[in-house]
Length: 191
Image (cartoon, rainbow, N blue to C red; front, side, top):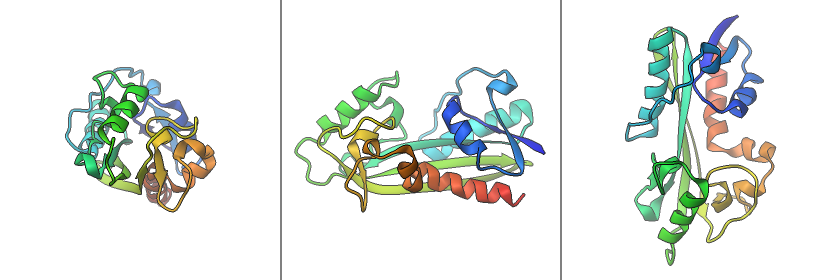
């Protein structure tokens, strides 16, 4: 069985994806004794995903993949977008980010938005991308206590609960990350 590295510091993501991959042994950057942060300096989520994957692929010569996600709000010109994790400050702070979004949308009628994920896979020297997107609306206040990031203020299209009000199982059936991950898994399971 071949190794493949998931370039993430999030152990929950690794456990989630590990259960789905059949033909590869999933390892983390910790397994490579790599603990540095790879700065996301690109201006697109696709660019950031490639930046992380290519860094690890070139440094360790190992097949790998990484993801980047963002919340794109129409009334804010696509913000917070690629800067979603650091929208309010250079230090990622979920509460400050949510507060700034709600402040910037105060009085706005158009609250439409989309969560987007891009996964970059580099395998045997070839680069592949897998994308997922889910449309929805931004609420005027926090709803629910589950999830992470902007989940408490995002209600996906066709639903009446925020991501933070859904169980992880229900969220994973429809989320942007799960859509992209399913595409990646299908690709890898055919290798």
